[in-house]
Image 1 (cartoon, rainbow, N blue to C red):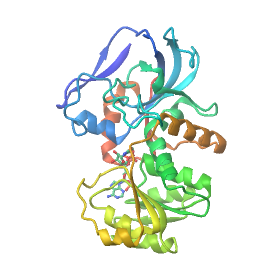
Image 2: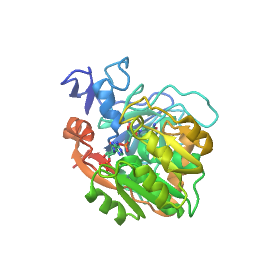
Image 3: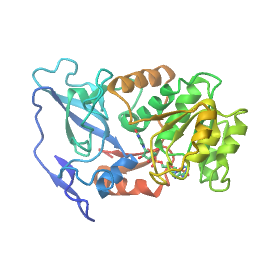
Length: 332
Ligand SMILES: NC(=O)c1ccc[n+]([C@@H]2O[C@H](COP(=O)([O-])OP(=O)(O)OC[C@H]3O[C@@H](n4cnc5c(N)ncnc54)[C@H](OP(=O)(O)O)[C@@H]3O)[C@@H](O)[C@H]2O)c1
């Protein structure tokens, strides 16, 4: 089988190679992968920016979907022919306070024609979804879902999404399905037009409006109930401006830096809730799948690469040109 292996963090360290088709051990399933999707983390991992101590070589990518072709002798919940996706955290469920192993980082990922995963790291995908769509869910969609659940968002609430990448566009789709009002920012007016087509109620170009947080506060009337914070250092202050009294900031990324100066009194007087989010548990993923099924949500796929273009797909995510998700289709 063909696969990609991260052998070093140097230029050229991500290489295409070949190996025999794998067999499952106890507790494992083997998937014929049909599609995978790219997250910003995959780029960071490949460059050594995510965990420079990571044990190499390893197979990249956390997110993929395909058909089960073999299961270990003791596997009861999956059978040959099942349509499944990977799960981001391989060893995290709601009863555990710790987790160690995520797909495509500490554990082997899915940028491989056949992927071996522990049964705890796969879930059946909704029937209405294609493999390409299901491959976009494990990281970005589960993260958006977990952030929205942490803030207990309901119909009529106001939510703010920063930029038009994978997490924000899933956030938009989930929030609209709940009946919430969506404010979204972007550096591109063209992308904001696409967000309006998906149901965004208010759009703000954050490059042209440095006070986008204040503008979002006003657009919501008395502030937003939730911001999904992807920017970190240079955006957190505006996100704090944007929230209503009792509002939530779900912090997931630090695209603009990991250090922020906080106005602690503003946090106090806003009765602000802040959540650090790391994707979510297997149960969060399952609950999100059920929500998507109920509302028949179709992920937004903007860019598609072939399997052989795996390296370009990972490196290309850093350009930020995409809207929603970038995928790799294995048999294109
Ligand atoms: N903690 C977690 O569980 C978790 C899970 C998933 C992702 N993340 C992190 O969250 C971040 C976003 O993830 P993603 O998958 O959505 O990434 P993505 O698909 O690569 O989206 C990147 C987009 O972010 C927007 N952006 C960049 N800088 C911005 C800024 N200063 N202000 C507002 N928007 C900005 C841009 O949107 P425009 O082009 O529209 O301007 C860009 O296209 C990444 O840092 C990622 O590592 C964390």
